[in-house]
Amino acid sequence: MNLFSSEKAQVLLLASAQALFQTIAVMVMTLSGLVGLRLASDKGLATLPIAMMMVAAAVTMIPAAMLMQKFGRRAGFLLGTAAGCLAGVVAAVAIWLESFGWFVVANMLVGVYQGFAQYYRFAAADIASADFKSRAISWVIAGGVFAAMAGPTLARLTQGLGAIPFVAAYLSLAVVSLLALVIVSRLQMPAMLKSVEQGHARPILVIMRQPTFLTAVIGSSVGAAVMVMVMTATPLAMQMCGQNLGSAASVIQWHVLGMFLPSFFTGRLIQRFGVLPVMSSGIALLSVHTVIAFNGTTFLHFLSGLTFLGIGWNFLFIGGTNLLTESYSPSERAKTQAAHDFLMSAAVSLASLSAGGILNAWGWHSVNLTVLPFLLLALCAVLGLMWQRRRVPSRAGDVQLKII
Image (cartoon, rainbow, N blue to C red; front, side, top):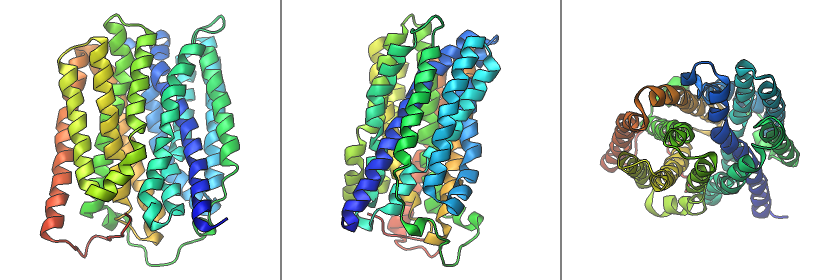
């Protein structure tokens, strides 16, 4: 098998692992707020389990990067999927015992799984040749298309099974994690990813001061935080508007399709138009969601708005990931990726934690009003870097690595 065929095979395995993790993530985002509403004594804490999942993911990022740098990507990915298996079992027991505290712990274990799974796209970038890199990242993220169909469907089919609602749903989460463990065990990562890379590495604060890094992390963080804040609040908001779980699951399904289906062509759009115009388009699409949300709370408003929200996230997330790879040298890769994902996950944690409180206190429109200043921040960062690159094509302070 030649190198190109081998890299495609490994990227497809990573895409499959991503598909299964995202299936779990979609199930958690669809069900955990509703389970939290049942178990929490303070209904304003309904989204706390999802928020703590994001916190756990953020805390896991840097240790995960260090572990994988020492023992290899596959070892880290195996540990992450094992945490997913445990999460499903703990969540099922917590629901059976009606323990909100243990349910929060279970969601945190999903966050540990997420902390490792976030590196699937970076592993694809490491494997891929220069011409294939942006498409490899897109392929892995496109694994979420499967999750868009499987996650809400699995949630609908399993949430009412058995004597206690939602127990079977979280047991199925453990089964999906076990399947993911089998898939990542088949990965054969290149030796270069397991060795200590040579070369001078700048301090992380120097890397983080680069305009390229700052724009990448602001774009990724704003896109992810806005998406998670709105997505976390949506099932609860729809319930407040008198709509059932089936309607909410359908909206989440179309939202997740919007998140991942564009991945089949986002890489080519970046190759053709450049990463910054694609990120700008993502911000515009997120803004379209807010316009729709302010104009009504019918099923069609939720459905169309959340679809635009997903597409906007896709452009910002893939664009930010591609832009980030321009900010570091090979010897700086692990710590730069970890810093980016830690900051992004911290922003997502704050967004998901605040979603329930804002929705409970001030309503759905306030949730969407809250995201507007952050969209403006992201737009300023992208336009600022675009202007700087047109004015000064090459900056000594930025490491410009040709990736597309």
